[in-house]
Length: 313
Image (cartoon, rainbow, N blue to C red; front, side):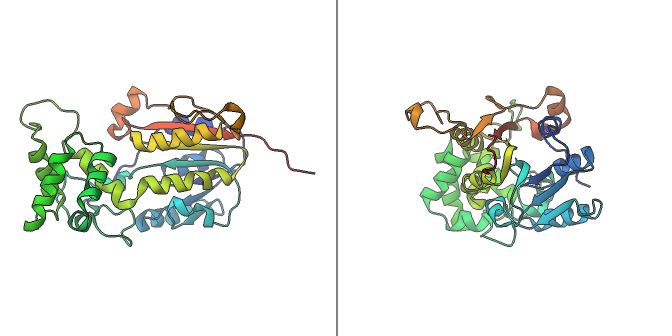
């Protein structure tokens, strides 16, 4: 059975512990760890959850039976959260990336550690598979996936290897792609040389991000989430790589009336502050958490609180 360990759980619960009887939105239910902890901490709280993965949605529905009238579930991706009927929340959390369930279920094709069809779709009902993506994408699209989204320094070698392999139909299985990338990069991984990560890690990440349009969906969803926050409501985002974190950081800075990045020269008088940053730097997992859950090692948590706006009389 897959063991799901919610990342930065203590930090999330502490930030959401300002009030009792709150209504939260878990925009990425996944394994449900954050949702369960919020429901258990305060018996007067309620949680609405979203997940476009049918398996995760089924887990959410099953969990809702334990918390009568306190847990509401929607089978939607978070970029469609504006469609749900609930209008305001006291706290919203995004735990980005893929869950332990998705990674550890070989048939989903997210992991190169187990032989399986190269799928990688977060919502298996939509889009093409990763194998099809690699077969039909242009060189420019592959460069974007491997170089820009995967941040792979040796992207030319990887892209060339993918294009070369198209003719023999070799890119259909996770382990085949991983082996091909390893040979292209030629890092010596697994041959006595020390390395932090498998050489295919960044390429798999980039393909998954491109296939599921994860960054675009994050950009769309953050303003939707902020709009659904009550005054003094808290928005928390946990990201796992620099591209996600950059999007979150810049959006949070904009909402707080701060420069979005070093090159942002917009005059101060033209900025508007609608929120207060609760984290000027991202929170990272403790060494103890990283030891207990290796997948937490790259997690970064950012949070902001919507400014108080009194209801007009």
